[in-house]
Image 1 (tube, rainbow, N blue to C red):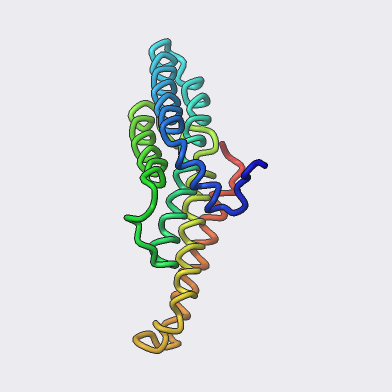
Image 2: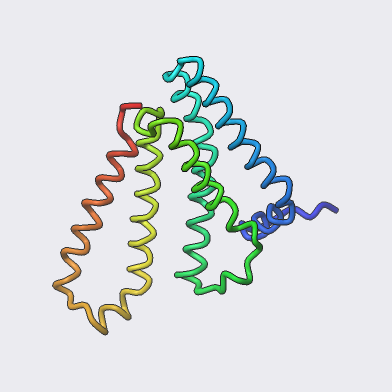
Length: 174
């Protein structure tokens, strides 16, 4: 009988068991994208280069953001020891950062189609996590050092930041 992953943790652990293949795919995607973009820029096709780079930017950023959210959740919400995690959990965020650094050397992200929405989604995810974290710790914070009057500016700040992120995520341009 086949052993299918039943939880998200089982799925992530099964992915971590095949880390060599996944890391190789990550490196090939980044290196191929950099070479193709470089060739497009050398052949004087910057518009094509920016449009092409939308695919690798999304393919590197979305898994990287997903694993960052998992790591931050495990660290701050469940207070899990990150040293007990498989090393693969740290590869997608590092891959995302390194890839975006290399891509940034070649193209302007503001001209990559969909990048403003992607950055809006990252900001929105960070704001939602911060709100969840604040709510999870609210009873301790409220009893120790925050008076209820201070919650009003905090809520307003979260609302403004969330609205800004939502507007970036749903913008009609690019």
